[in-house]
Length: 386
Image 1 (tube, rainbow, N blue to C red):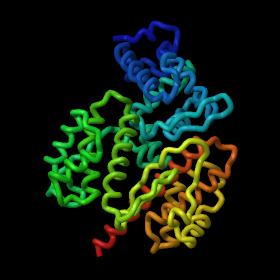
Image 2 (image 1 turned 30 degrees about the horizontal axis):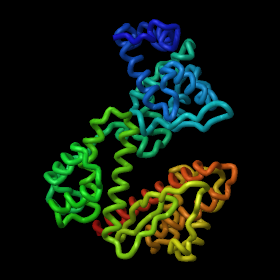
Image 3 (image 1 turned 45 degrees about the vertical axis):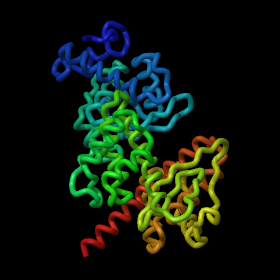
Image 4 (image 1 turned 180 degrees about the vertical axis):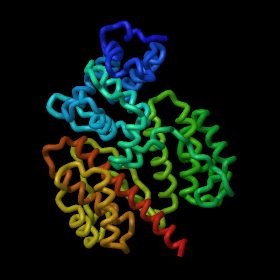
């Protein structure tokens, strides 16, 4: 059914112009209406913290303000626009920031969004955006894994294999957990104990994988936007890891005001930050148990960032450099040395508001820990191959 907006003098009218000509695959009215329906839904679903009562046309105009502050979206070729939609752009003056849509939307959805925005400009001689164009730019621009085409489809893991083997949760036990979750059970300790009762020899990593595999289909069935579902699943997995791994540790695992790494045997797990109000608080390296030489190595390797925040690729490279320079360092301690050094730099920047400072540090810390988790997996794989 055609949306009311087709009858208005707003954005949709522009699609009778040059963006979709008679030779386009969207030339007929039914296809055009279906396309606009999809695009308007994307505009609303991907609008973080804005007034959705304004309607998709007004939301699109607001998004265009942010885009136009960085590039010329009316350019005949759409490549700059696709890049901004994939990677995002900072706020400029009164123009709002543009969020990075790479991890939220697949190639076709970004193409739909780009065409919708270009249609809003009612400009002529515009080249239509295709999913193939978006896919090409994802590769060319080195969009990180969370922004890949595969990451923008909500695929849940399939479990199988012998119970208790690493990386292979018991499928019957996972199905039992999934039924509990579908019934409303959300207590992670209860779910952990239920799985261990069915698979008593499972190691901590298998238990976390089992909970993730059980909860994923429950989240996938939600009507929430894709990125909201991803965020919920990620939150659940972090909480599960936070519950499971400390049970395997000796002594107390102290909570920190920022994202922190905790040792789990030869590996590490991300510990979520403790709730804190007010300004950013950085843990002292001495109180956090970071040896002085590793703390100094973290400060040296970080150096003085040219600008804040340090992006994900740069954070990953810093973590790899640390392990190259100090190869025998405990992975969790190495991560925390870098996180602590970065926290000190960020907290010293008084131009940043406290929420920004916390976000910068926590995103950086998450990337460092994820990089070193992959480093541990690589070392194990290399050792097994010898």
